[in-house]
Image (cartoon, rainbow over all chains, first blue to last red; front, side, top):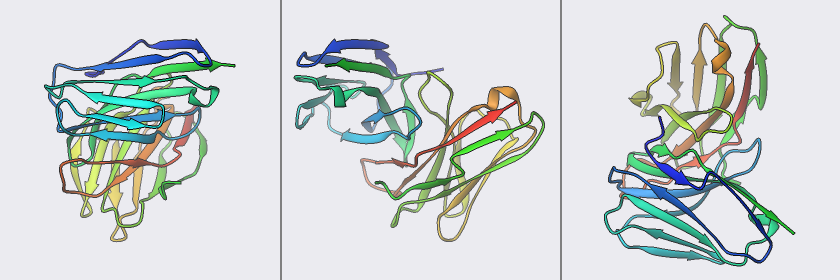
Length: 110
Length: 114
């Protein structure tokens, strides 16, 4: 059972478009991580957010942590084919024990 | 490159057999967690090891067991394999303590049970 709900499950867009992925939970987390995973590989950490209301930018990626630390969003500006992948959010409960969402599959076509 | 390495990368086993998966943690990390990722799903927490002892367990039966060694490397053992055990098994290493726990994953072991 996934206690973190990610939406949408699948997103297909053209190169240059913007997209937003959402991660919602009824639980409060001490921190939340976003990962990107490619087929047959392990998840790669993109960002960690800790403080409620925090916004972090990583080039064209913007991450936001909700004020109550229960939800988060990932926004990609001017998506590129290299952004294709499975985006996973994970809430940290303690000592690296992560609760993952089911993921959002993003496909960016040229 | 996270420095977390897993072996083997792929494995095919028969139902009822036993399997051992291995993980070397990133330098400086003292905690290892194991996750199971079924096709189309996010990773599910199996258990975590810290200081060679189990430090938390997810909703997995006792036939899933593990070890952590003094050099912080770890093994995941699964007995009496079932078809539903087919999945990508991921190892993640982290450093205990602090407010923001960041886990770094290996490339995973793809286990197929036939």
